[in-house]
Amino acid sequence: MLRYVMPVVIGMVYVGLNSLVPEPHRRRLNALVVTGAGAAYISGGGFGLWELAFCALLLVVGYAGLTSYTFIGVGWLLHTLWDVMHHRRGTPIIPSLHDSSFGCALCDPVIALWCLTGGLSVKDLYDRVARRAADPRSRVTARS
Image (tube, rainbow, N blue to C red; front, side):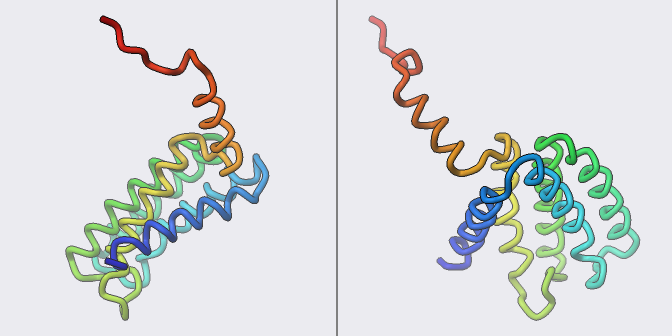
C-alpha cells in the first residue's frame, strides 16, 4: 500500500513546499526542476542516445516553462512516460531501488496536475475553492 501512497504524498509535499516560494520565482524554479528531471536517467542509461534526446526535449519544454506553467505540467507528464518506460525496461531512476521509477511515475502526475492548474500556492488554491463554494451562482440547481 505504501508503494502507491508515498509517491503521491511526496508530490503533495513538493507542492506544499513550493507554495512557500513567491511568484514569479516559483514558476522559474519549477521550470528549472523539470528541466533537470530530464537528465535524471542519463547516468543509468537504458535507452542510449534517446536519454540525451529526452534531456534536450525537456530543456526546450523547461525553457518554455519559464513563462508558462502549462509547459512545466507537460514536462512532468513527459517525465512520467519516461519513468514508466524505465520501470518496464528494468532500469530504475535509482538503481538500488527497483520500484523508484514506478514511484516517480506516481509522484510526477501530482506535480503536473498542480502545474496545469496554474501552480497556485496552497493558500491561493484554498481561497479559490472557498470562494467558489460560497458563491451561490456556482451551485448547479436541478430543473424540473
